[in-house]
Image 1 (cartoon, rainbow, N blue to C red):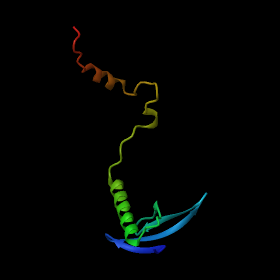
Image 2: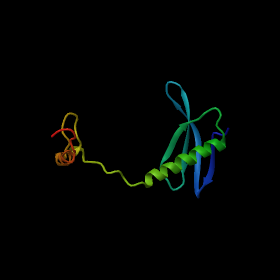
Image 3: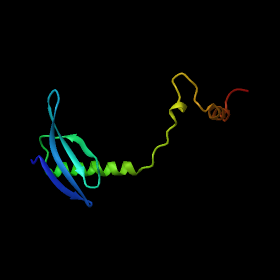
Image 4: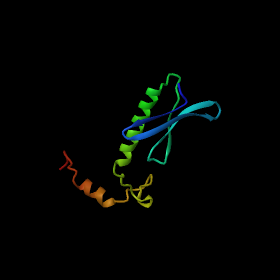
Length: 109
């Protein structure tokens, strides 16, 4: 198995290299860069049975998923001051009261 290789997919060039990270024990990770992208990625560790084809397939799948997630609209989030705190009523009490008013009680007269 090569420690470094390049391949093309969908008009992009992927440069892949296996690097060691020294911690309590030695770990090897697959790092890659993509043409037209300034970031460097290390999505998974190297495994003993890795082949060029298997690593290439995992990298393409990972990167395509990443591009898809980036293209999704941002999820709206409340300002930090508007977020609820444990033990406190929601910031928008009017909406809760309106929801409770629509509840029909059965069995009471």
